[in-house]
Length: 173
Length: 185
Image (cartoon, rainbow over all chains, first blue to last red; front, side, top):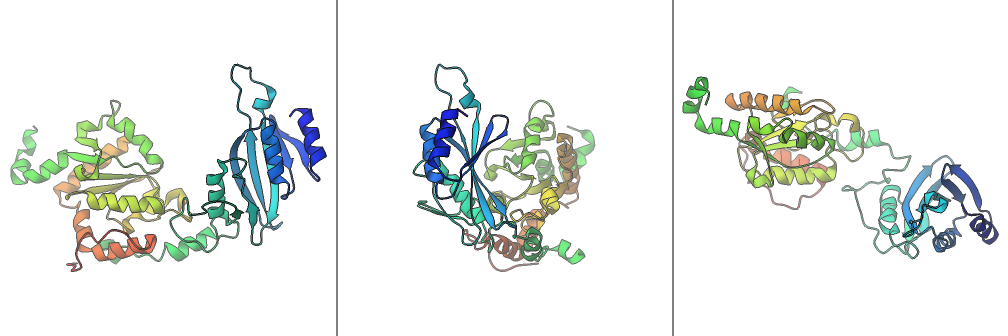
C-alpha cells in the first residue's frame, strides 16, 4: 500500500489496524461504526472495485466477522502498478445476537447480491438494503444454514430421512 | 441390420425402436455433465449407440441426471421428467443421486433421488468415465428387452406416493398433478 494512504487511514480513524496479510494482500481491521467511511475513503483513493463481501461466524467469541475484499482496476495505457496488484481485506466485527449492519450499497452498488446472500445464509440484517429476499435457498430454515450452530446432520435426519421409498423398493427395505 | 436380431424385430418392433433411438434430454446438473460433451462428440461418439442429445424434454426419452441434486434443481427435474413422452427412461449418473454421495449431510441436497422420480438404472462412481455411459446404455437395452425398464409405469402406478414425497421436499408444487386421483397400484 502507498504510505500516504496508510497515514490517512490511521489519522482519520481510531482503532484501525493495518498489517500485511500475505504477498500483495493488506488486512485492515476497523470498527463497525467507521466501516462505511473507510470504504468510501479507499474508493476515492483508487481501490474502486469491491470483489467480494464474505462473512465468518466466530461462535465462541460471539461475533460475526464481515470481510470486504477490495482491489483496483488497472488504468488504461499504463503499466501494472503495485497498487493494482494489491488486494485490501477489510474486516469488521459485529455482535452475534440480533446481527444488524449497514448496507454498503450507497458506496459500492454491486454489494447488493453479496449482502442478500449473507442475509440468507447467516441471518444478518442489512439496513438500507432494498430487497432482502431469498436468493439461493428453496426451503425455510429456522437457523440460517451457514451458522456454526446449524446442525446439518440433525437437519438431514429430521427432514430428508423420514421421506419413504416408493413402490417395490419400499417393500424390500 | 444384425440378422440374429431379426426375430426380435418382428416380435416387438416398437421395443427395438425405443432401444436404438435413445434421445437424451440435455439437462445439466452437478459436475457429471462434464462427462457428457466428450461422450456425445467425436472422442467417444454416443451416436454409435443411438444416443443423441436433444434440446427439449418433449423430444427426449432418456433422462441422464448427472450429479448432485439440490432442492431447487429437483423442481426442474420433476418438471422435465413429467414433460417427457412415454416410454421414458431415467438414469442416475454418479454417486450423488444414489444416496447423496459426498453431500450426504448437506442441508440443501436431495439424498435419494428415487424417492421423488423413478430411476431405471444407476451409474455408480465419482466421476464415472464416459465409457460407463455406454455400459449403462447397453444394460438399458437388455432391461428394455426384458420389460424391466418400467420406471414410467411405476410413476403412473405410484403417482400419489411420488407426489407426496415431492411436496414433502419442495413444499406446495405450483403445477397440477400429472395423473388423476385414482391409482391402480
